[in-house]
Image 1 (cartoon, one colour):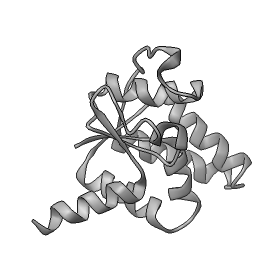
Image 2 (image 1 turned 90 degrees about the vertical axis):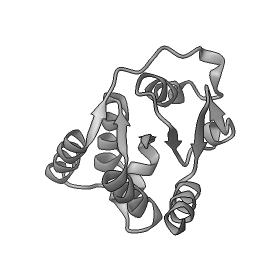
Image 3 (image 1 turned 180 degrees about the vertical axis):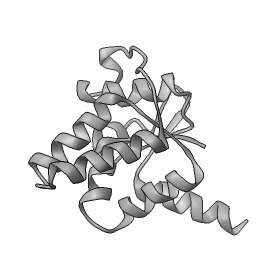
Image 4 (image 1 turned 60 degrees about the horizontal axis):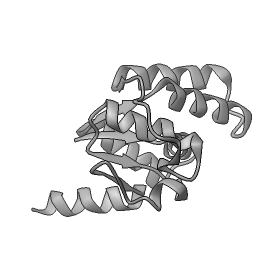
Length: 136
């Protein structure tokens, strides 16, 4: 499956052990991850400034993602597509990358539930869908 992972999920994945970390690992193993430079820049900035990870560790994370994801130039999205204009990049990535799913913890995106046929799910929803399909 082609998935866009929002920066907030990636930040949580690299800041602490837990569901987001497991979800990102699952995506790396099973999915084609679609990212934009803006998503990775946001991740790097937050990991350095908020989480206080060493710059070298963040550089390694970014390099790892660049080797395990497909980077796209986001499609142009109408400004009124969502409440937060910062989220247009994620929606644009989903269109440009022909994503089948957006994984996010952002309430502004989650409230949409779907955009242009692309389901928008939380890490928990993604995890539960995967586990359900695994049992079949």
